[in-house]
Length: 85
Image 1: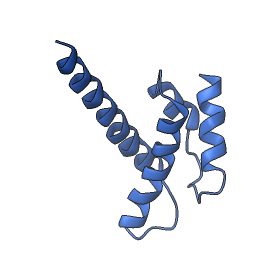
Image 2: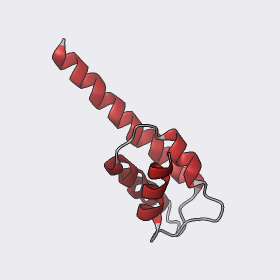
Image 3: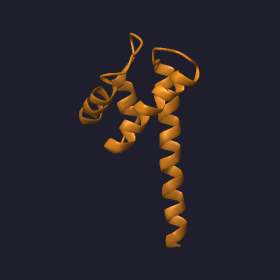
Image 4: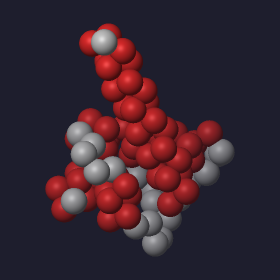
């Protein structure tokens, strides 16, 4: 969990984050995620903020990004399982 938190800190370092964003909570939700997926969450959360023309990224942006990235990952796993059947 600590390594995921550290990776999130690195990739969100230059982002304009609202005060009170709990990156540890985000890291806990992404159990088993790769570094690329963690970076994708940071990028996607920034995109959610930009789409709404906001300067700062919120906790909700991160929550939506986690849902989107982890959904894509589970869909990828399901399609691979279908190939092997």
